[in-house]
Image 1 (cartoon, rainbow, N blue to C red):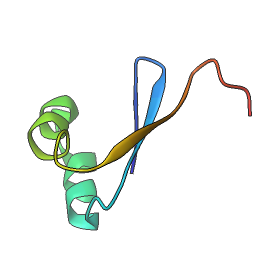
Image 2: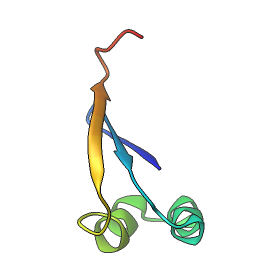
Image 3: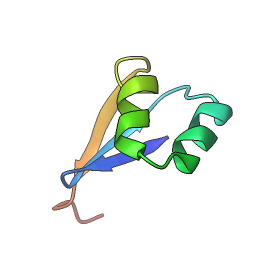
Image 4: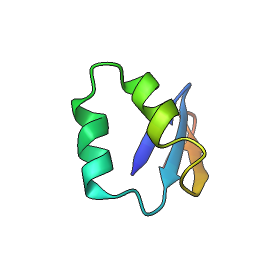
Length: 53
């Protein structure tokens, strides 16, 4: 799963498809992310909005 915030791109590992689907369907995506994804899955910074390629 990819998540972009403040021009930074993060990749989250092993997010179950049902969690990702619920995130996409959530009205308050930030709230869902904070309650169900943040601090529950490994992630890494992939790049920033200034990256070219």
